[in-house]
Length: 315
Image 1 (cartoon, rainbow, N blue to C red):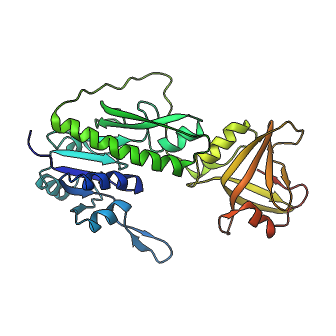
Image 2 (image 1 turned 180 degrees about the horizontal axis):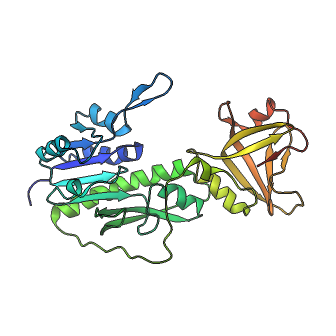
Image 3 (image 1 turned 135 degrees about the vertical axis):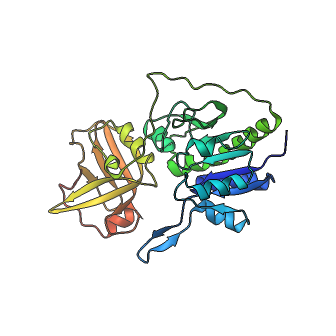
């Protein structure tokens, strides 16, 4: 087998951890494809992707196509003469791109496929209260996250994990899995497994702001998992109704307190140091929140400058 010449495709921090491992293991990365720079912030300054920043710092060739079917881009990609492409947290590729290298194009996905196909597998695994997840490498085909599986590795989801915790765990695990996958391809010593389709598959569709609003009538564990599964980004939110004011409030950290009571769902119970929301069969203790227009803060600090009325409630 000829020496590997790898093109890496990715955009966010999650992809950087995997690219960094490949660079440290001294694989021949002949090109990096990432998202175009985008204007961000009030000054509309161009914002570079995390992968681009890393690639530039490490003197890697960077391509930033706006159109993956553009003839000039395809010619440049072909000229890199890669024989393997690795995709981590990037957009859907046209067949003309993923079919180009001799040894194919494989993707690292942050779930145990076929479960949690889609854009937000880490979020949905926590929201759904899973106790384990993992990473999968698979060869890309025409559909999204459906290709033949090369390797899988499992990871636990702890009861207090949020998205950031699990993201970092899977990034480190994924880097190891990608290296093992590359080695297997290099040796020609691997078998793929076709993904099974069943009625019990859970989806990991993209998350929008509207889907992040907390329904305080849900069971206590579902609310707790919902908050963890959206923290720190994009963050679960609710409305704080206090006297005649309604304030959008993001909740970043909370805990569960199972206890029988007769309060309606959403009612606030508070003192100078703590604030909790009554839910079915218990309370959600708020620990870290962000009131609209304010910074993210510990609840005890928020309470120092907040006058809550006796009948204040959430939602």
